[in-house]
Image 1 (cartoon, one colour):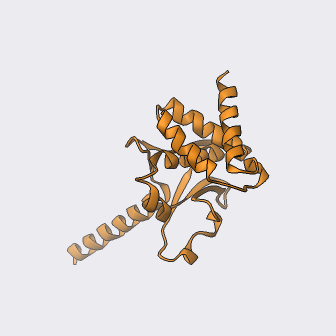
Image 2 (cartoon, one colour; image 1 turned 90 degrees about the vertical axis):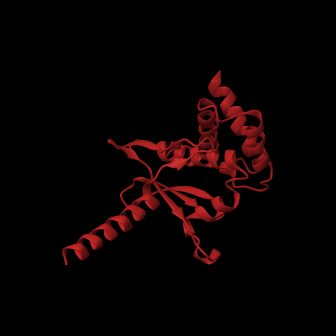
Image 3 (cartoon, one colour; image 1 turned 135 degrees about the horizontal axis):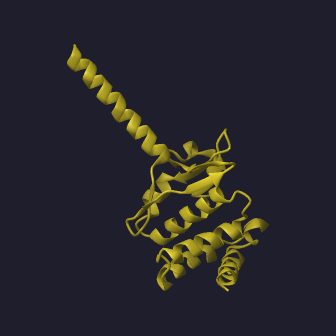
Length: 177
């Protein structure tokens, strides 16, 4: 009887661990390093929540993602939550690691500075990758190609992918001056 109880407790703890990891584990960068998005907001300090969304049918994709592979949304208490498309990551993560690093830092920038616009979040992501030694010429070109492939975008993104990228580079250059 005691052995069964102990087994059940271990199973519950294992399930709880899996649940918590799906919602709050650190992001693994292409360098192999893990990072968490540290946030100080309204007198509270902690780590932005991460939700990796898995699905078998595209109809079951998280509605907050829209056409994006990641978004930052505040939870019910206003705490930043980064929602990532796990299926898109599985399909493209190995082939486009710099893009996923960039996407993560972009959403983290939104979590850390909710007032930041899209170009500002891109700028912060670019600078963060440079600071961490993750922005080589080839990685920058990979991220640039992704932006250049986006055609029409809402005005908060500059109106198009090429303009979005141009304004990102202008912001990064200005920030370094």
